[in-house]
Image (cartoon, rainbow, N blue to C red; front, top):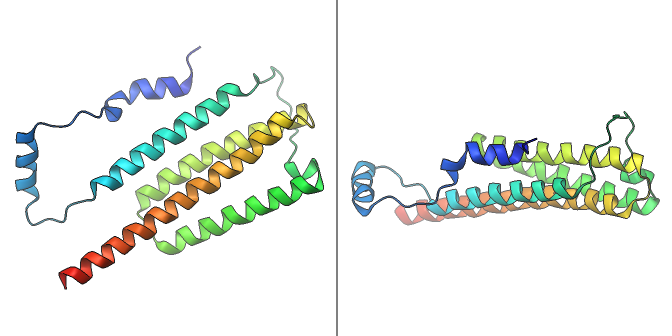
Length: 181
């Protein structure tokens, strides 16, 4: 059975192509853009790299998880049910993620970027739900607990990097507008 991630990569292969257009094409394109504001090429590279790293990371974590049992149980176990220390860890990451999401919505970022970010966060949340069911099936398994904490860290890092990128972009926009004034 083909892995869905591998299938997605095969289907989207052309989007991952990093070949550069010819110099002639670039000159024609530059002429067409004359008078229009140029987009930041680093921005696109950063997003492409972030998406690729995220997908590779999620695929690696999912590959290392034990196979799902044939019978699906509706039970799940959160970190807070493991110990009081894990409850503190879960509360910390939940609060930090919530604060980051609140800050992100306050910045009023590009809707396409927000949608992409939310899709990636949804994938990580689905992975976390799977880990919770695995923890219920194997209580106290340190590998699962570690993976759950890593999942929280990954979500928080993704949000923090996105916030940092937006802040830098807005600073760049402000500097550019001040220089042009």
